[in-house]
Amino acid sequence: MSEKTSATASRRSVRLASVAAVATLAGLLSGPGSAADDVDASAVVTYDCDLPSGGVQVPLEVRGTFPATGEVDVPMSPVGVSMTADFVAADLAPLLPEGATEVVSTATLDVDVVQNDQTAQTQWAQFVAPATPLAGDENGKVRLAHTGEVPSVTVSAAGDVTLIAGGLTLELSTSAVEGEETPADPVTLTCDRSEGDTGILTTVQVPDAGTPETPDPGGETDPGEGGGEDPGDPGEEPPLPPVDTSCPDVVPQGEMDTSDVPPMPPGAPPWMLDLPGQRVCGYAVGLATIRKLNGSVIVNDPAKEPALISALANKRATNRPPTAEGGQYTVFNSIARLDLPDAESTFLAFGFQPVSAKVAFDTGPLTVSTGQLATDLLHVTPFAVASFQQSMRLYDVKVNGVPLDVGPACRTAHPYKVVLRGDFTSGNPYLNVLDGGPLNGTVDLPAFSGCGTGGEDLDALFTASISGPGNTIAMNQANMCVPDADLEVRNCPPRLPALPGSPTPTAD
Image (cartoon, rainbow, N blue to C red; front, side):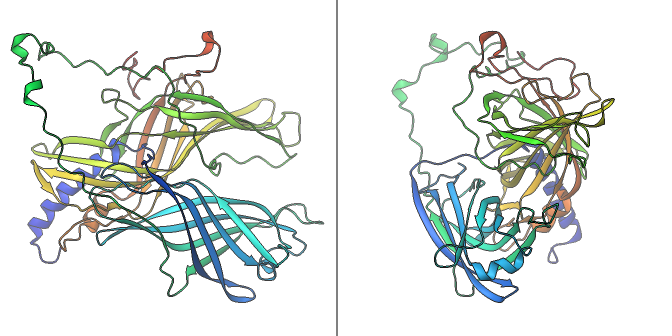
């Protein structure tokens, strides 16, 4: 920036602001994908952790199934990933209350994605290890085996992609010990990768796509000779694409995040029941607005092959009856996944400068929680919350048709969280995941990193133009198709809902 004139810098800032606005909004709810030819891989990374007994080294074994090769602009999704940390029982016990007999751990691992001298960071968050005895095994070892969902990675250029483990954070907790009414607060343990450890988890080869095959000239048909389709009246509006008639064969995976659900008022404990969940699918469409630019775009545009949400509805139920101490508290938790294609947008910056851009997203599992709470029989408050973690990457940016090279790793510097809440002021409130309804929320977009090539650092421009709080989202989810239900209540095929603010649905 310091080498540019102020006028040049201003023009660049303006056009990047417009590009990033459209890219951010056009696909805010997209999800992970996968690649073929997967291979099992494992790596052991050593960490230095500060414990009450002093600094100790903790080995972390990372296992999973990773793509052997990847493709440009195709999401790569590791699956079956586990992170197992080995502690000496005598080192771990002082972190927890005296008398504790077991420990529950939640792990977050920072992971660097490195390709062609470009680096971006993602997080493998909310990996959970179940209750593990503090006594350890016969060798005095406590093995905390964490499992969870890994966000996908998408690159826009050929070249080896290497995943490198960074910082490790563990949140340790235990159930209430004898003589205590409530469990102690969790303890956070932060560990750094040991000096000399490369931290390499795996490397995925992304070859050049190659030159596409040239169509056989002999197979072409002259539309004027009756072999082609009738293009129709060029003045007519193009029809909406056909809507899928069945649920995709997708089973959402991962831990449900209920941290944004309204807390239960003090009182009697509830009962909780884990269920298999009901396989359902449906559509959600909406509008999103970047606060700094005061501009909105359509999310999951129904005119551009909208994507379906795949969900396991009502996978967990929590209930405290109205007559119990503290009043009613009911929650139904569902887990979902939404796989949207990369977004593409074209618009006019300042009314005259045509700009286009594409955006890819790496998204974690979507948790939808609905329920109600009450302090007495007369005052019942319903709620609905949908949340997920996500990162975004910009690519194929063009200004007036001229490419602006932002590089293969122009993305948010770390994942951000999206939280949407039910709108109970409308005539169709979001009461449960099967019936759907409106959801609204705000997003705090982090800074950008890895933007620019050839020594040109564009991070600050994207950050200044987009990053910050107060970016609003308004979504509307239609009722879900339940393919395994009786015919009269199946609601299939899935139907497109109206866009927020629209009086009628956009399509049947």
